[in-house]
Length: 263
Image 1: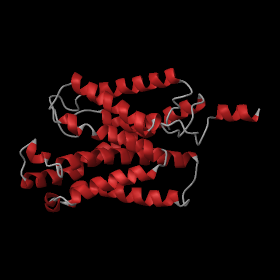
Image 2: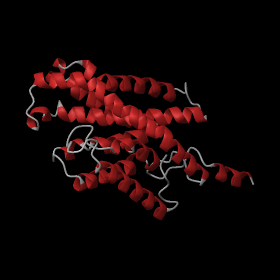
Image 3: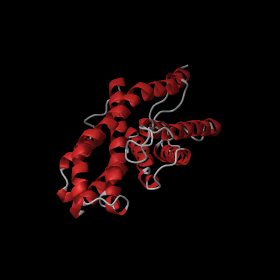
Image 4: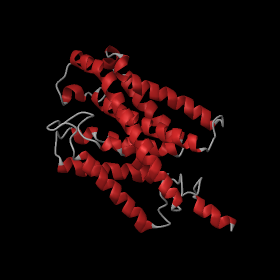
């Protein structure tokens, strides 16, 4: 879902400002006090998929990116995190694309980053276990893309919307994680920023397979509890569902609009 820009610009700006502020607050709260780096440095990942779904892939990514930058200025940490934090707006964009079922950019970005990882020689020495959730996410993305593009799964029931919400959130977080992996390994920041050797990176990878899926699960729980309720409230108040950032016609409308058409 992307809130229509043209219908009520002041309301849309208010939504963007609110979500940007919420992301900034979450980004300024350390997961662990004095912990300055890594995927657990702060909490904006809990909300970034929902922002991408509600505001659309482009405006959502802009809102998340601005919120993260403000949060990094409030809770200043390792300057290298300004590079890794770009995974969050990318994840928000991916969530928006998936929820709008625009598969080409999602599949293209995910594939490009995975290829970049696997063609880098150091990655050949790292256990696949460390990125198992990223690989599973790619496989599910491929299956889901084929199923929906060929009309195998075109259900619009409440159950389908819930699954789409979960799937959008999961892919958003996996894309965020994959971006950080891409910057760390093929981008060679593992030694340029941190001075790690490939052998040290190997042992870090052994633990990564346990840690990163927890991040995905937490974000999916928030998406189901908070995101689902937000979508319902916006539908009830007449906001369009699944509108892209260019202002295209919505695929669904609220019950209030439908009742007005009938009358």
